[in-house]
Image 1 (cartoon, rainbow, N blue to C red):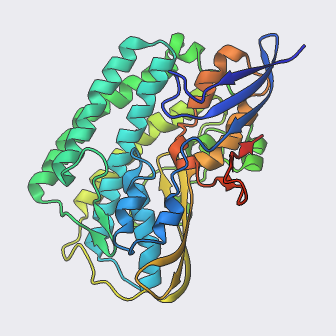
Image 2: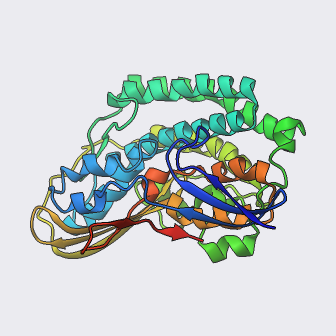
Length: 375
């Protein structure tokens, strides 16, 4: 007879609180659902109480790992409302900063994956090397995380020739780490055995559930906002959209591993072709209307919608994060799997539950709150 197994909301394996309800028969998962709401912070409402400039710091705090791309997506959407033309140099600098953030995010995810698979040697090696990305970001921006490098109209800090040279040295020293990770996934050892054929998301299901980012590309679909709808200077830079066809945890990991090489390639090109000029444009008054913006965050497509009433504060801000889109993929990947694989399947999308919790339902009569369930 089927029984329900609960994972979370508070569990050592989960970095953030979220609750998974798994319907299990024997050791096989036959159905699953996710209960959201444990990390709801009312951020979308807060956006409407602060100025456009103040909201940069708020957007950054939706996700600590992807803080830079959140401020970029927000800033680009506001720039449309204000009819601001961002200087060319700032566009290239944005690419450099965002690809460094992608490296830091992907390396962190590999460390977490290694820990989940009890590959402790790999975990320690990856996490030590990942610290070097954090150190470089601190050197360039002043902070290891929440660096607030993007601003409305451009970026806050330039990259001097000396800083560019330090970035190039870092890239050369980081390539062996990417080689090491790719080797782990291809050597047919424990890392491969524990991820190959696990949590398969077929191509058709990936499209059906609206998966994004490496989760989608790991199922054989070449979709990347940097190519599909170029922003910043991505349209001027040459890079490959990485695709794997197996749809399992290993395929998603290989996509991220190979993407680190592409991020390095993008950074090198941006530094080599960095235009001269200003790094930020003057602000203008926002028009009355609405705009929509999207970027390719490390986890996938990030979407911002902003409605303006012509004042210094937005009337409405809506955020659709990649983790929210990929949660439906988790449910699909869990069905039919064994219970011991649940943890690595959940982590395969690189979930951010703080990003996901955008809504809570409140009973106006009692004040009681109901959480939203995905199934």
